[in-house]
Image (cartoon, rainbow, N blue to C red):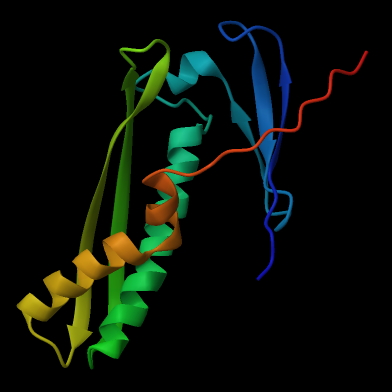
Length: 146
């Protein structure tokens, strides 16, 4: 399986700085990021790690659910998946993700409501992004350049 890459160029302090996150593998865009906009109710043209996690999670979940539903005998006409990722203070200091809510509406033939709900639960625990968000080992290679 391939490795996908994004990179961020950041300038300045947390409070006054800003950056650009580039979706390097796909080359489909570069997006502004800043902590004041990240912590604000209005994004005002900037993205955030939480929004990017929400995008990753909703798309991964949709793919996984499509596979699970097909395996259960359903024919997926459409899925509308939303992931809401919340951030808040961490009692240990700083911030943390405080919750992710996935909402899905589907048009699927060949299955009933109970099968749809059970399939959604299976997809929630089975998608790779869900697995990563339950706890992942993180490694670091840091270099200070002058």
